[in-house]
Image (tube, rainbow over all chains, first blue to last red; front, side, top):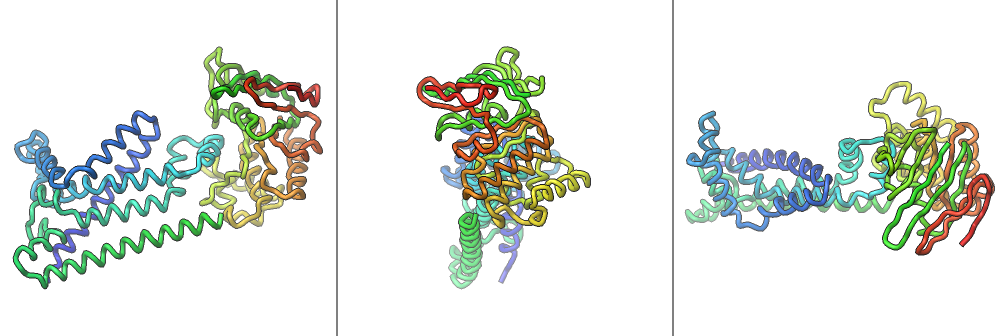
Length: 222
Length: 223
């Protein structure tokens, strides 16, 4: 059995999850500056969730393809996006970003305003309040967002196929491999990859459930 | 010394406060929704008055005329919130030292001394949900005192405490006031506060919202 799709999937999902953590925290931080900014970020962040992944992939292809200004510039400095792991990372990041952002944002929104007031009176600036008060209090939602985003990135199909293609050993991820084997009529292999996907999804769901339970118990004990 | 003359409205509600306070204890009494917390938040900078002036030790904290509105962190105000508002993820020591950006050994020593003075030094490594309500109140006081504030504000300091602990807390506030010689304002509807101060302002609420009486004159509730 070729395990490269597992390796490629994990690599792509891990990198895109890290990108999304950074981007989501930045967006949540900026969105706290005002309602107008928040609305713009909320709309932008929701967009990839409501669009078909294939269309998202098409947009990325148009943006980073060799014929586009960005794509040709990146190519001139030796960076290729289309049909590479980088392309798969970008596609997965864009598609899974809304889940990470929404979950982290909900966690930050649920932080009791009195903690923020107390921190302000104690002389904390917005950066300190964000990282030392809000982030620890929003930790369960943060972790849920990360796990959801990771799972979504791992299962990403449409946009990845459009941007990175299906090159075995290079850009072929688990869902692409599954599709490939079904198309070839190799149901046994398709099942094997399917079981791996189910195992990962189950682990992610259990993690979220475990974290939610811990959070609820902790809140009840307070 | 604190001198304050402010107006703040929310819809049909209007807070109109005008008083001065030396290094003494002032209790602000009134029922829920009377504007006690709003008044404390105006002093601490968490809310901006619509107009007026707040001066603390000759330092202008807020002035609508001069367009001055200092950030809460720059006002040198120690505030003890209702229900303590200790950060649940930080230990007692972590909470007390929260206001310090770079914690030095001296800060740690000061924190330990404060906790000792308040008889809670044995709790320094505990989390807030592992200690009692009265102990949390003391931690909140230590967290305010470590900033060497120019004024101490207490918002309903006894609302979640039993009568015996509430009496202890008021006695403690009186001791702190005597030791630190700074103005102390207690917003409360707990009658026990009368055991530690005669300076009481009553807030009554309605369409027009006013504070009547001055601490120097003692109790002066009016409609």
